[in-house]
Length: 137
Image (tube, rainbow, N blue to C red; front, side, top):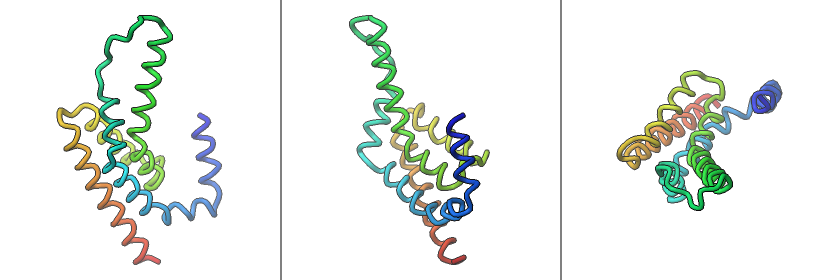
């Protein structure tokens, strides 16, 4: 709810709204670079880990394990978060595409292929946005 309120305030500001097309292409290219990094691969592998036995079996160790897993999954999706900001936060189509890409990375038998495919599309989208920005001025 707080995020929606902040987004509404930021997007209602005309100067900030004008920055979205300018930052879109670099944002997409940065997201493609994130997909390429070893940092992303480590986060994805941690996010894909099956829950194991946490010892000792106390509530605090389960909370720590859950917090670490959640943090790794959030960080793993940071490139896609950049995409949502760069292309449009509230576009239903974009949300569905990003959700499908995240799901494919998380549950596909070979996550490296899903990551490569998403990296390719992010790079192409970044080049498209950059070219469109240069042509339209």
